Image 1: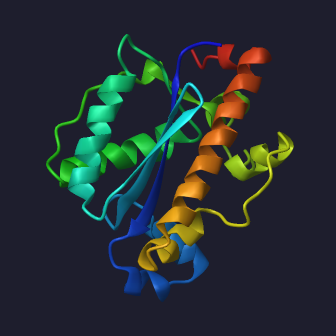
Image 2 (image 1 turned 180 degrees about the horizontal axis):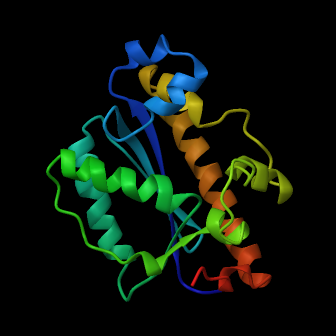
Length: 189
């Protein structure tokens, strides 16, 4: 098994009261790094999870970049599900807004499992992380990312942690299966 680390984030709107009034479709468009913030960051390396949570997003991001540097020693690949379209852009933009110095990276060292498993096909039917978790036989925990905002508001941090740990596990199992089946070797160019 190769050396890699997994990254996943959870976000919540900056103005929860406004968010609560929106319908489901409006809520989806509201999850962007201008209207929302990062409330939790999950990292997994060598079957060990690190969950970062903090009310102060600036402090959370500073801690994240420090941990990123530790995990990236020697150019370790970063793995995630939809990481190039959501997690990394969100982290970079929120770092910019919070005036946090990032550690530059190259996308060729980022493994986006959603892109690989779909052979870079684009469209709405590419599957969710939960869909792939189910296909791998990993039990669902009865919620999805749309619940994070209310959990954060109600200070249910342990539930957020368990949810994030489950996402990290699914991502890790996907990576391992994709390595075994040579799907990781699919490249766009």
